[in-house]
Image (cartoon, rainbow, N blue to C red; front, side, top):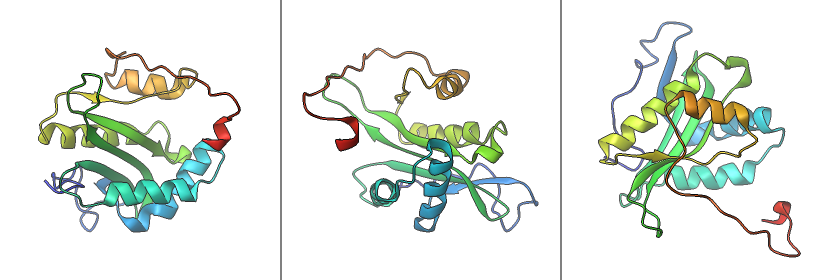
Length: 173
């Protein structure tokens, strides 16, 4: 499997897709501005530098790292995305898939687009041989917590911990 994966598509090729049908495909460099726009609609902040880095990492074809970058498209327009990769951490964690980002245009909310993207990413991870998928969500982000719980995610065996360093702010990190 290539870095972005070569698994079969979740829905048909758009050249054969009916009008209004959602197509899940590999994320492409041309999707950068659309992802920045969707994220800005969701978060209220444009972060082009951040997303440029994410795209460089996600679209990197290094065969030693399996990265997943998928886009949801309808009628030629990007309406959602998901990125992830397989990671093994130092704290005794086996290799597992990690969902790093997921987002859907708010005008397409409640259409199961994020669920389709998540399912496609999970298939890519499973095809690569991992048995577990993880993510992190802010405790106060109830809609995102509810989304992952509705898709079978539960509290894992690790506890995320953090320490605020004196003289720093979140904006500077």
